[in-house]
Length: 503
Image 1 (cartoon, rainbow, N blue to C red):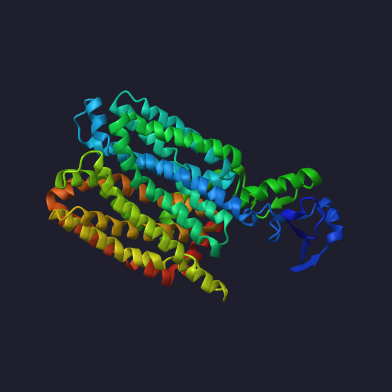
Image 2: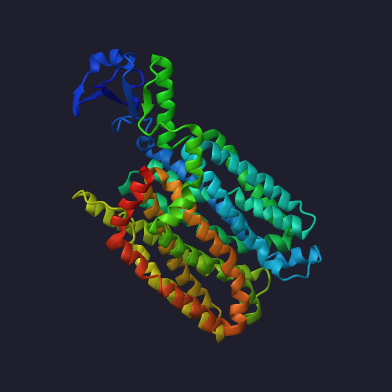
């Protein structure tokens, strides 16, 4: 019978104890480790205990939170870029002498179409080669395309580079996955709340900044600002960012041990017998395969797509609503986004307080399940339509401007209470394939962000702000059973998904 040895990363210098598995029996052989490694037997490299600093989850809190702050700032910058040009769209249209009104929405929404494709490429490749290089490559490309937007000479060129800008976004898929890399399950709530706040605040603050920069410096400086911010971030990445993906770290560790011991049978515990080409093919189709074969991912992604579509619909029409109904100036109209921003912040604190609550309670009796992340989604499912109803009818009857702004705050609480717990759930549920799951979810999310806003103006023309937003609210109410069903049947569905992934 062939013996297999399981060696932890802390054994890299061949000085520590290790476990030998023979006929399902484990024996400690500290003094015979070099003999066993050199003998050509199968060796599986894994992380050690809490003292093993090669495991990202054992890094210092200071280092882990520094990485979370950096990647969250990147996400804030790229989502700021998503919507910063919305208030200056009339300036852009005037400078390029473009009369097609569809371009005003397309300048913003084409980004989301590009962001559908980017994560589908980045996520599976990051599961083969790690996160580090894709953060660098994506940020550098983002800087290049932002510069091209600032230098555009016609509307078609601007729309094209906005699309490519969306494709260069890597933080969508990688940030939640990094949280899973750095923190154990029962400690992920606060970090997930932070990385979830960034993509919500960016679109809210963007119109405020864009409105004032556009009036003071011109629309091109909206894109120059993004270029400068991301350039500074890339410098920080070059200094501080490091690999966090366990699969890649253990792969490198096994490669190092093979070189030192001349034993070709030393492998990471995640390595398989598949060829590089087979792994690439499997990885590339994994996000879409999971999306359309996993009921868990499909339902959650559909829900997030609707919610995200509503966010962009409100953000792309709120300027028109407050300029026409409340006569806000082009610079002051950005202040109408503050309600949404405050609501998002409140939602983040709510998620921070509740995301780990049920998980920690169940961890004491060893009954942790990813579905324990979902209770805030139920709360958000009720809050979201309430915000839509109040926003629509207060704007319809032109009640004092603070009323619809407060309503957008309620809407913000519902948005965050839905999206952050869903991302946390997917990271917990899909483990080392979390990036692919998040990328699959991003497909519906960005389809919603691209096409739902296009339905906003005709919907409001036909039904008015009151019934138009009420219709959206009724659709949102129909999704409330989704988290309830997953809390009941999610574990069984996930076990079926796991068997498919292992095939």
